[in-house]
Image (cartoon, rainbow over all chains, first blue to last red):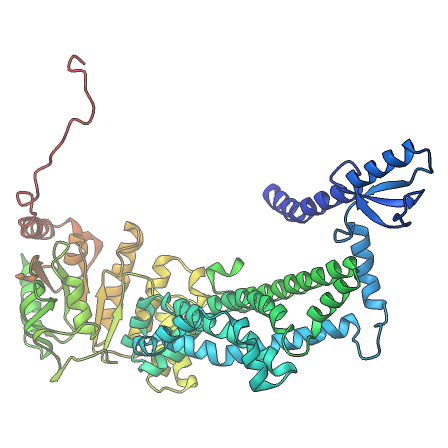
Length: 309
Length: 286
């Protein structure tokens, strides 16, 4: 009981600790806060209310103004705009969903997010449809491995984003090239990882199947495939995480769209609270998907010893 | 004395049966210089229980794998009936030392595996599997997964799985090697009981002298480097075998004989002499 308790505590702590640091930096004025936010401009010509300026400059200006006997400006210590405080970001997580887009052609945040999710879904699904069977075949038959793996090994070093311009030229400017980038980023890794996972299957199981009179195709379908499934599921969870990384690049090519479009747009308006909110949404979606998948994995693969992880 | 007569006639009867496995100058080489098995010639009778024993490196496991069709032969021939062995086949089942039940299948599904692989319908296979699970006494566990079973139970299921397809020969490569002494004795009795009631020839690899004698009609002793036949010994113990037979003088003298045969190849002299350096200064006075 005790260890379960302390385990849960550590899980909570692992989230709480960064939040505490972030709060400390945001709410304790003596930590960092390199700027001054001006409340009263006084007689400094270029000071405006609400403007931020470095502390040294502010102090220097105050000194000059004071010596010449003019009105002294006032302000309080502040962090740069690109570091919003936790409460601002949490508020933005709500308001960014409820704020109407500035232009009619623009999308609501939830629409952007949904668009991103569909791109990931199609890129990852297409990659898996081809990559998983090919990976299993490469893992199961050394001839397949020799035929496919050297080229794939070579190809995977090409950074997927490098194909951006090409993808746009071939597939147009909308969703197709973005799906293609996710596909390229996932597929080649996937084949190699699945092949390696397949090779880890206990050869004694394959031999046992052969001595029971199973033909080679039967060994593949009735032993290799079911035997590899739990680890395949785990691999897919990891690969899906990587797919989100490619998404951010994919959404910048052609017409920028989805959550990346939202982030760049908000950064342009200097709404950094919205930017952080959107980044956190990605994290939360990723974490939620992974938890759901791991839950399914445990239920599907009860027989598997490592299923608890 | 009468007992010995009995077992002698029993062995005579055995040798009048037709041969099921024939090994003819069988050899196995890995690469140009590594000879694992050399010139193994031997006939194994139908329904015989043959155990194979020898020091490590004598190629006894390789012999079982060759008969199973999992290893190729580099010289000579092995035949089952009149057919040369060239690959795995449904006429030969194999039980391994490692637990090889399919972990994603229940006990029942494991026993059904070979049957359906060989074309039985699901209904037929299920019926057969149920009977076999009853034979090994695990009816209550038929819907359990392998990881929920003890090692001994897993090996019982493995035996049932191999026998369900009614092979002519059951090859067993140290199947009880990983079990504790008590479980092992129970498994041995269990195996003999099953074997006595069906038409199957067993080739059983072991490194345990008691096990080799207790189970066998005949014992094949191999010597190492390269693996060659050293002796083929008739076991002068009556059937059915009982644990009491482990205490008889016949048993003990046979065990002594086997022990001498096997240990005559311990290569003490051929080992490099040990060179012990004084790594640190040692106080000679101490």
